[in-house]
Image 1 (cartoon, rainbow, N blue to C red):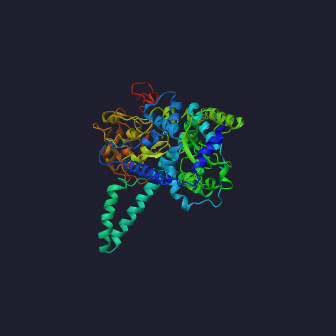
Image 2 (image 1 turned 60 degrees about the horizontal axis):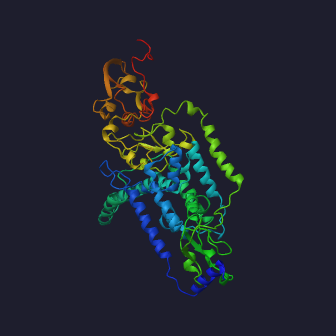
Image 3 (image 1 turned 90 degrees about the horizontal axis):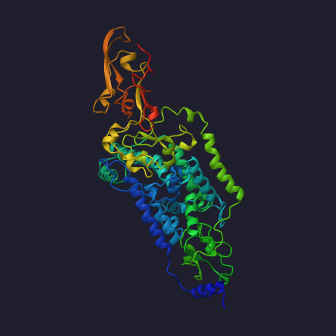
Amino acid sequence: MPGPDNRRNDRTAGAAGKRLRPLAPWRRLSQALFLLIFFFLFIKTDYTGTDRLEYAVNILFRIDPLLAACVMLAVKGLVALMLPALLVVGLTLVLGRFFCGWVCPMGALIDLCHPLLRPRKRRTDTLYPALPYLLLIFVLAGAFFGLPVAGYIDPFSILVRGLAIALYPAFNQAATGFFTFTYLEAPGFVNVVTEPVYSFLRATILPFDQKYYTLVMLSAAVLLAVFVLELVQRRFFCRNLCPLGGLIGLTAAAGFFRGYGGNDDCKACRACRKVCRMGAIDEKRRLAMTRCVLCMDCRDKCPRGLIGFRFSPPSRRPAPVSLSRRAVMAALGGAALLPLFSGVRSMARVPDPFLIRPPGSLPEPEFLGRCVRCGECMKVCIGNALHPSFLESGLEGMFAPRLIPRIGYCEFNCTLCGQVCPTGAIRELALPDKHTCKIGHAFFDTDRCLPYAKGIPCIVCEEHCPTPEKAIRFREAVVENDRGETVTVRQPYVVDALCIGCGICENRCPLPDGAAVYVTAAGEARNPEHALPAADSGLYPPP
């Protein structure tokens, strides 16, 4: 009675010489379609004249199984916003690692740029096959122990953050500069063409306003490094680094969709190994479903039609990946021990007073645990107030959003950051709640404020204060100005109970360098222990 290998050989040998219908064009069509959807949602993550977003612009992050697992491990509970990721897990069990080859926008862009970034030396074997799984262990364990680093290595976070903070604003500046030049300098007949083009771009592609951010170069460098690594090995990031790919690959290995390779009829042919972009085919032409992204190049390029895919039961399969016990323990130990050092830093005792989080943000530990560093809230911010933080909250807080009032301010009637947050790190607030949500507090530097320091009248801060009952008011005072004249001026002060810390007073202060009014995180609503002391609390000295 023939064994299973012989039966397989009989089936595949019967396909030899037959011309199979190519599937790679369908894969490319799927990649193009999902890439267009991604860019459409990315562009729609912007202010369009209303306080409501029309599309589920954050769906890419909500279907990410890696981010879903990390967020739930961080909060030690179920996060309903991330449950759509179960759909990807379920489809992977049925169809294999299709997401990486047919859906993922990062993979599609890498494949698109491959003709320009061909590796100098073709490598069929993956350079660091165990590294994605070790990173996966470190990221998941880190989320559980209080070291949220998934957003640093997750492909969607890298892609959206790099585009939102660096490439998209640079593209808008270049386009606006070019069309401004043609409008001012080009002959009239040129403007007949360029002005309609610019109007079309403004209505469809370009953002509502030009944005400026911190960490622009770093965000761009991280994203561009993913593509430059193509010069080392095709799909280097996907094969050697991506923990999301590792998680999806492990799920695919436990699923029902299998690929079968060649047999003795292959002889010396290695066409499948040469075209495999993921190094998923070994010397014996066996397909590793942990790495196979179903690009179908091997199937379409096989000269004898011996490679294919089918459904089979998940029993009697070899281990999907081989990891040394020492490496696994190092990944787990690092994730467990590093948070201990974080807990004894000075910022754990005295946080940065100028670290202001968006309205609706959760308390800091849960906020950092949920935040996936996607940059969506920064992109959608009308006032260009939100920026990626650097080390203000430690290494684990890098790229999380913070408000910098001197650059931008929190729009009083805007709730978009809460709508766009995919994990609930920023709660979606109703507009009345947003109006009273305190994210910080304004203080005056009387050594710089013009009415205090120089006796010069100035009411800019009070004019721009958005609260219905002005949080900035005036006291009349008799002072001596810098010319020695005695004058009466109105000196501003802050009403503690009304200030919400939006930062527009600091943003609009007319002083050319540092503002005379500054906003700190004092009194923020998410931390009741930071409440400002009342006048009758006994903390103020008697007059």
